[in-house]
Length: 445
Image 1 (spheres, rainbow, N blue to C red):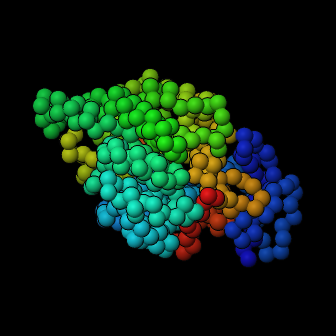
Image 2: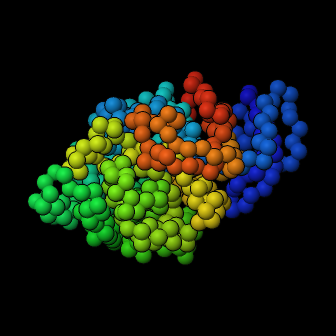
Image 3: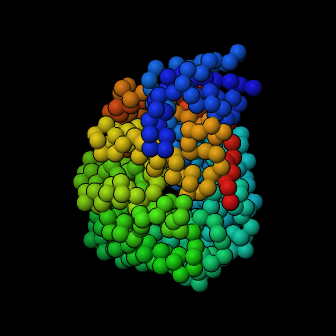
């Protein structure tokens, strides 16, 4: 059995930071205490006062496999995630073919079992006509159900209200939704297409994919969840107005309706389209500075429960097209945690709160088994961070298959130095264990 002792670490966990040692035996954290004596044959790592965090759990990524692997694949993007301190990902079903049958879903799990550097799960995708197949999803083995109520690919737009009601009424699993009203977006888009043709200036993206489109869809989904008692999780909030739909007066474990915000919506604003262009073209759109401020307020007062990435890479060639042909989405898993720690350095959020929103809360929300914390008996999914070691994002140190990042040129004030997955040192100061792979996570449901 592999034994590792991490000495002299500042452990960030459950709202506190303490200095202690962590003994790992096999896949699990055995002991957390002061002055642990190294067992025979143990590998000893002196943290030298670095910060030891539970690995982040990213509840929304698009790793593009199968079918879109010219953009990314599970191996390349999970490797980037490990370097960024993300130890578990939950991937979306809009691949080619889509994960809208149990057979296609299991194919993705099989690929991850041989290719993923970090731990993984996948969501089953709902459509207007696959309810019977959806209900076969094993709640202990699969993260949840994903519904596109806007901005779908293939046939994944679920716009039949009777079907939606049946799905919401028929499953106790977490139903995660992309909320943008398609009718509103189509009308807005046609207005600007008529005016500009294909080369619509990027500044109109948040007007086309407007606050109205987001709020109309989010509020309808929440109304339906309240009516049916469904367990609803709304992905990537982008407007201040939407935050009023959520509550913070009960613990997360008791919430039936929860919300996520993504790093790009906390970072960028509409003025940034002038310099970043399509590199910050996402759906939902990056909106105004006041929207960004409203998202921050809701994050800090716990109306928003989770920070994620919506990592969705496209090639440089694809992104450099005109507005109507440039796809939405961008890569983030390598840079998300460092970006959030920059905000810690600025005094905008505490490191303890970042850990809560990126590790603890995804584990609570999805009922992930024995992950998301630095606790005895839990899996040793751990990240060591040097808060005093800066680096700058460049093309050369960007690990995504697409080869670019919206954070190019950004100086990060901290560095992920080591990442442990199930007790294995997968990433160590720029070096990877290319042999050991992550595991399929399970759920306490």
